[in-house]
Length: 353
Image (cartoon, rainbow, N blue to C red; front, side):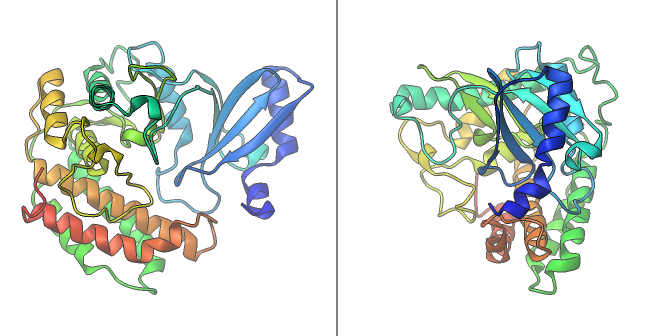
């Protein structure tokens, strides 16, 4: 990370003064950027004897509410006392004089995020099976929450959520295309968007939805058997259609029969090994736990890949405009067309569940 980019993320003096005012002065502190994220920026802060995490949007123009960290803080705070495991929220700040954007602070958890490899202690068929079960069971728990009782009754408009998802991601793509289409076009994405608009389900259940639920947005504790101890990245959470959450999680989950991933930078492959549940088994367990059926599965899985392509195209725009130093962003020139082709395969039945 260039020093200039870090300075765009953090006015260290202003942040230290803010934390001192709100958490108390300390003799020693440290601030470091977490390199793994590709959307909102994450900073690790050691504040005396406390280990904290700060979440803020990337610098530069962003599309609509794609990086709403105050929303993320609100929902995390609301579910903190439920059976959904989340890091303890600490502070939220909307004063842009501190670091130039909204941000919030939470306690840091200790464990493993299964991103590039499985921990050696999980390399056993029973533990692998439990990883998948913990993942889908926690999603079902989110979908079972009484959002009214949690004070989230006004957190979103669940009716029409799925239609708005299609419309919103079409607009996100349009925002990205303003810049990226000067480099290359992706006609398959326009075809997929048209199909989605023509096939939006008329009805869906109304639940709290995470919006970005997948294996590398949760943390497992340091012991065995695997225990899911934290759900992260709630910036897209709202009230809506739980099947969209399930479709999104499945878009990242690999079966042994699958072709090579279109986005190897974001999709790991270790869950192809013996013991991990298949996508079909995850769906069956989610259905049993929630009482909902995964109807219109081709729609929801294609929508997930369409959204993933939309994210990639927004990444590509930010790269072209010089608003990120993430080495993955320029790769989207080729990755997004590959994702669009995958969405078409799902629609046409060539990539079954």
